[in-house]
Image (tube, rainbow, N blue to C red; front, top):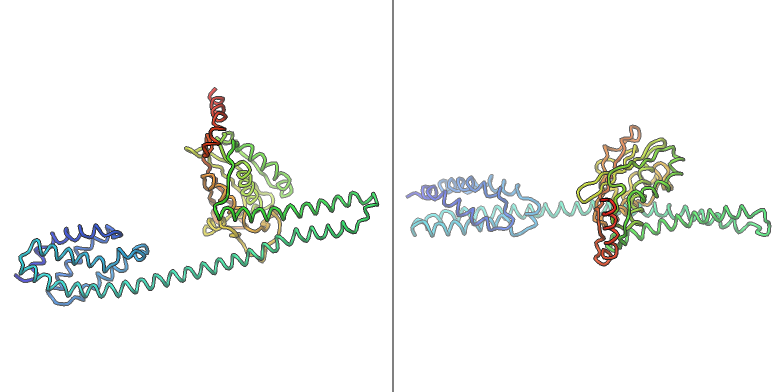
Length: 414
């Protein structure tokens, strides 16, 4: 019988047998096994014509279909797949064909296999070289980005630190020149001391932010879980921003939303810091006369707090970047100090710290915005998801506060 006829006769059992072999190869996708029928038909054509080059289009398709994860996993390489095909073909021929037919099939299949193995090995090497080259390009771009971030941060940090230092030095120098024996200078001295206090407070805030982001990076941020109420935290934030909102002629409103009065367990001081950062950021990027609104809702096991502003908005590609440390937007050349002035500068640590605090509580934070436009002001909405806890995660603390949580639940039921 002609070899081509033998190959056609064993087509169906060959497909079943090879598919079974390939199913044990880790990383080989289901979609990769489907072209086996086309591969086999071309193999039959190669057997009948003696030209293995007919396999080239299929082998190229297989190579182009390789994913990045498959390229990184040697267990799913194309030469390994071909080895599995060879083993399955030999086993099938041995089990279902006579000795003479099995020998005939393997004599015609081995040259085709060798050709395919050589082609796929070359192709695989080229793919790996391209993959490594692409990875190096990505790494280079990332290093350039990090270098720019570092340079921008040094410039911004130098400016942020220099401003309060200049303030302190100036007021200290003026205070030194005052004749304290003259009672008329008492008020003036008090003003200078307030200026020094303001400068040292700003320095402390910057240093504290740097320490916080370092602790978050190294998973050293510790939380003290206590009973907290969101309405109290947001009331505190509202009181803190009252003056700046008045100066900026903005409206700041906390809506009465479900869950606002719920008691949960968290680190009240850290959560206050997180909400303060988000609200301050909304005020900063909202023009004078705009508005900032806090709303929310209760979800199964969580409470969602939404801080919406009528500000200049954020481009889609920056929705993640703003939560990266030192990932402030805008050119560092336009930097200006001021935590709440319109587009006022900062070291770019507020939102990354907020993200670290929220995630340490088991929650998440993200932003939605239709884009950046300083004329139309599409605004932004920051979503904060926090778990609703009836007891703190620490068992020891849970035993301490458990009765309080039960009393709270019972009082609500009554």
